Image (tube, one colour):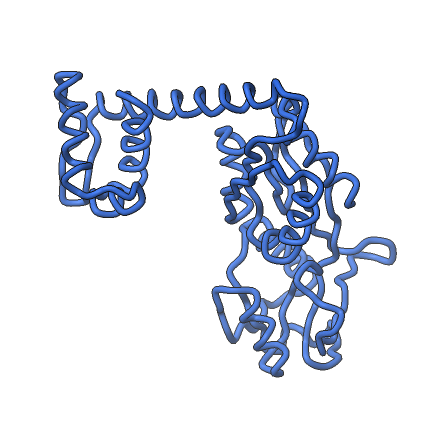
Length: 285
């Protein structure tokens, strides 16, 4: 087995499908099947079988997949440490970032960072904050930018603190919210919980949800056109938008807030590009 085989095993394990795996790996299906057969011949063991639900791994196959994950990670770490033996800041920076932060703030930050450190390459993955949290736990990325409060035993830095607001096309009274149409959007479970807990503590009746959409941008457009109100975090609200915005107050001195965190491990700071990016984010706060 070599590095290509490691990637074949991990990709096939994720996709559970020969066609999709071959497409991701940029090889033909016969070539992929041949490599699997060669690995089975090398280990004199059945690694995968094709079932009704797609490709299924045997017990020995699952063991080899874990071995492949470990070897990919070890090789990646070795390459990173060798690159960092020079005095220049270069190498690959592996980031896992909340989709909303990646949409509204990350592009500008990355542009400014790479202007200072042009020899750094960025490997970026985005998703729900719950998924980003898992990626960091599995050490799939050097650091994670996570929205909401998650358990993390190693280093974390509060990057942003933003208000959660009522957004509508015209001024509305908070007392009227239960009787007005609301536009909901798909979001991370932690934000859902924050909003639902506030609603239950404030109102005795459920919200009147009239529309459910998959994207926060779609939600905003519907609100701008007067089709309902929405509950939005400040990060997605622009100053030039014709929206009535009212931050949610818990009491006279406290707003309902959404925190954005940087999560990383001590070992990651040994890499110059990681330390440089964390310092850069701290300076941008």
